[in-house]
Length: 143
Image 1 (tube, rainbow, N blue to C red):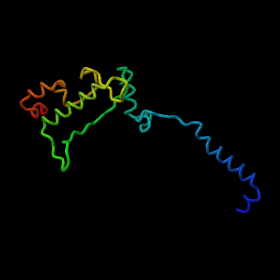
Image 2: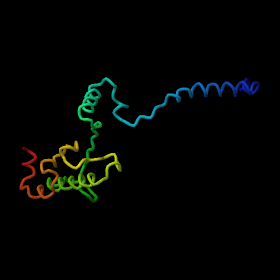
Image 3: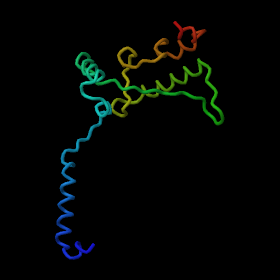
């Protein structure tokens, strides 16, 4: 404490020099918005495969969205009957499909085969009438 009181200009100068020295790392800060590139090494198998898929298809990397459908209300959650759960999932899919492109990170194409969406709902072609007409959705899923 005695040294800094005797030489205030030297203390302020050395403090400023240290702050500039430590701040030099901020000159190379890069903002990365792709979470995969943050956590995967460039030469990892996943990164190599993703680059190959981008090259072959011209599409961006796949992003996965997992939706857990639970019954509403309070109390202990009981499992939904299969058909009700599939219909609730179809409602979520329809809501996401209705989002205009560019308005959300979740963008789905119109046709299930070109959208990149993999879901059990593909078995009914994302059609509510087909799902309701299926006498045994569990048997359809088991095929």
